[in-house]
Image 1 (cartoon, rainbow, N blue to C red):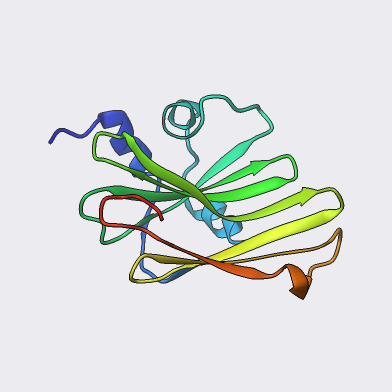
Image 2 (spheres, rainbow, N blue to C red):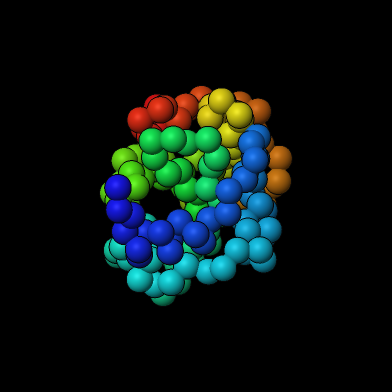
Amino acid sequence: MRINTAFADFVNKFPIVELPVMLGEDTHHVFSAENDPLTDEMIQIFIESDYDEMTEFVPCFSLNDTEHFIALVWWKAGLLNYEYTLATFNERGEAIDRKVIAYTRVAQGLVSRAVTTINEEHEIIIAEGSSSDGNDLFDPTTAKTRFLELMNDGSIV
């Protein structure tokens, strides 16, 4: 199978990580310092075609041990909205699935956060909660845990 050159260049921006890996509110600082930035063309083709100049994308990592697809995680910073996205592609660069798996969002006086762990079995554990504006602690009444899994076909369920 011939791999699309533009897609291969895009994938090369995402170093492979060993699992487990955790994504939190400040994890993107490590990726910003260690990984080369994405070009505008890469963002428009493979991530989002319609974004403004205030939005930033940072390549984070590629998951290991995926035989039938490529799994990438990037960080997106918008106005009061910061998200980690897990996306899967086939080897031709065609999207299979995509989910926001961690975030910090500010709206209506609340700060909502989700932190994520991806383990060796490609299980995705997401802890979510909210707090009042300016408060770093979750309100326990808003806390919940969600579970997703990265399937062998590249779907995220």
